[in-house]
Length: 200
Length: 200
DNA sequence: ACTGTATGTTACTGACCGGTAACATACGCT
DNA sequence: AGCGTATGTTACCGGTCAGTAACATACAGT
Image 1 (tube, rainbow over the protein chains, first blue to last red):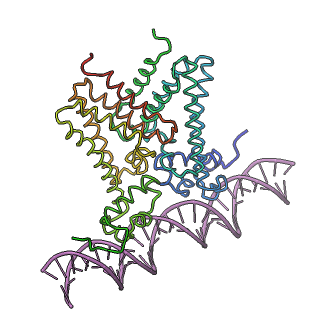
Image 2 (image 1 turned 180 degrees about the vertical axis):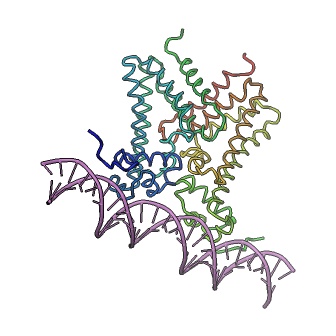
């Protein structure tokens, strides 16, 4: 059936909640969470402040939803790897390195949105903090399990090293103008080879 | 001569400008730059908003002074190394690794203040941005020169790697609750050994 | 004592921002 | 047609915040 909603309007297409979250995501990432007001988000979403507050009870709730979405996408990367290479942790590991490579090269030039959010939302009782912390530990556990499944010794130490290296690189890239992204990928691969489970 | 200023007051001792910068430094680092108002800074400095605005024309100027101070202290680390071990780049390099170790272990648990400032002050025309960018490139140049002087091959690549590793670790530490600080130092040393100028 | 300078105090402005109320409109469904 | 629901519109409240004005105080040097 033909779409009968707003046949003359050019904007909406997607329901307002998605548009608001999309606008928030864009503005939060580009200008920072604290630097963006709810009016600006409503405007960018081609809607208004009232509908924004009907979907999200407060700006803090919107921030939490924003961070939740980011974390969900991060989780989906890992679930996608497990889906694409079931029972093959080595292939999953390789896929993860390739994913890191992609993020580091053509990822946004403003660093990791989740890490940025963690820097901006310092209040320990802010709803976003718990989401961020949970995501980080989930990610670490996934890495440890992956290394463990792939037969690496001391998987938790390796996870810490690679976590710091990749996560840190994303942050530093926004200050350090040169392009050491490829270098980080080489370091990741080198670290993995160094601790390879079955020395050739 | 005896101090005749405010014999009954317990607070001042230091001139107000220093107190203001000190308070700003503490509050900016703990709660974030955008989250702290000028009144709070004046209060914490045991002074008032007027004298704050007499010393710093605006909050942005105060932020710039704050970042300038951070950058100056960062520079002093390198100048101290050059002063303590003149003409001995290898000793300087060792001193720098020890400095990294100290920062990573008992440094603040909120990451690098300069990197946090870079995340919060996204506007390209903000006075703090230029200061931050200049500092980062200065630091990178110092690292490249140090590796070059110490005889390492490909000093710029090595500088990128260590820069990302150390800088990234500081950031990630505030999310990743476990203590992989020691691990990062081991990685630094391992990377340096790997590219050692004179293989044993 | 006189004067200039740095600081403290109070009160204020104007803008912005998060959040809400009240009403109007458009649409889907039966 | 009639109704409920989701959305749009306007106007507003209250608080916070950056920044300023005007005046009062304290001190240093002479």
